[in-house]
Amino acid sequence: MSQPASITRLDLADDRFRIEFEVHADLLFDIDLQLQLHDAASGQETLSCHIRQAGWDVAWLPRGRYAAELSPGVVPDGPQRVSALLWSEANAEPRLLDRRDLPEPREQGATHPPGRAARPSWTLDGLDGVPVGDLSWNRGHDDWFFKHFDHAARVIVQLMLDSDERLGGRILDVGCGDGMTDLGVFLRCQPREFVGIDPSKRYELLPEVARRNHLPGDWQEDSRLRFEPFDGNDMPFEDDHFDVVLSWGSLEHIAGGYVRTLAEIRRVLRPDGLLFVHPGLFYGACGNHLGEFFDDPWVHLKLPPEELKSKVLSTPPDYIDRGGEFASPAEYWQWYTELNPITVRGFETELRELGFEPWRVALRASPLVEYSPELLDYGFEQLANAELYLSAWNRK
Image 1 (spheres, rainbow, N blue to C red):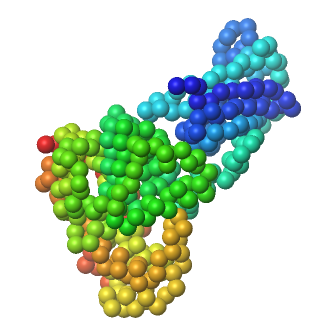
Image 2 (spheres, one colour):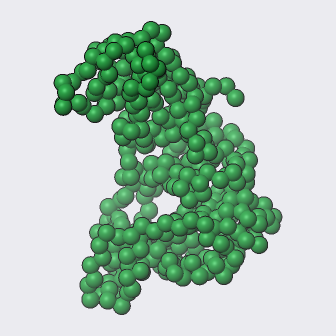
Image 3 (cartoon, helix red, strand yellow):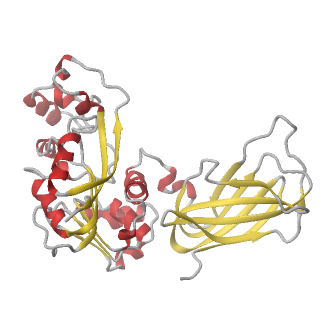
């Protein structure tokens, strides 16, 4: 494989170091820039600054040229040898892509008086093509694409599955929805096969969504990634076909229950394959999926069903960014009535009875639950647990 990125320039002007680099690959993930200074006489490192340490989470960059500038705050006295290093991450390990050294030592005195040293400060800009500020990882959790292509994919790959080698094999996503998370996992892991299934066919919008978010379109020609309108209750795959099965926010939406889907997942997942699942918790702060209509996350536990239905059907939705989807109040009500009342304890019992062995679990709790009279019959675990993330081994 050719070099995915290279440093093209390193210079110092007006107390600022400038590093220019070029991304040669279509996409480069999890990038870090580092500036190192070494004492010219002793060779001892005197300064090391990373762009990540300054708060820049450069999750990905498309092909193009970029420039970073660093104001290090304090530069040690005496002649210094200056180096710039360009890193990315592969299989949870840092990988050095390129290094560039100034040919001669530079001498630069302290840029701030003693006792007034400033923290290192970085900037990063594109020199052609897409402005860095327009990329999803600069927009944060209010952005639907960021939450799925960046955040969800990283949670799955890096946190819950620990960049396991099985991610390079065959992957299935059950209930893939719009496919944004699938694309994020696929491009990061480059698996042998990736299939996303969802009868809603919302993934048909993915090429346009990806284009709007500055992703190159080459992935559409890659036969390793495909989407199918299959139902999780009846999957046309052979036994033990997949190395990894994913399910992010889908099991709660399977009308009539998800027990058969879990059994199908177990069937198509090979022995000692990995399952990742993030099911919606019905009684938690994210459980009703009616955020477009109500500020109260537990309104579905407080109002009688007929009153809740009336309010949903008569209220214009305050649409949350969902990647360009705008459903009607009637559709929201139908989806609400189909929700499965998943709880942490009940879901754990079901997985263990099927033969899944837990590997990693993470819970996100609500910062505060204030009991009103309507909530007194609900347990602490039900209301306080907002989100569940789980990875498990398929023991057959």
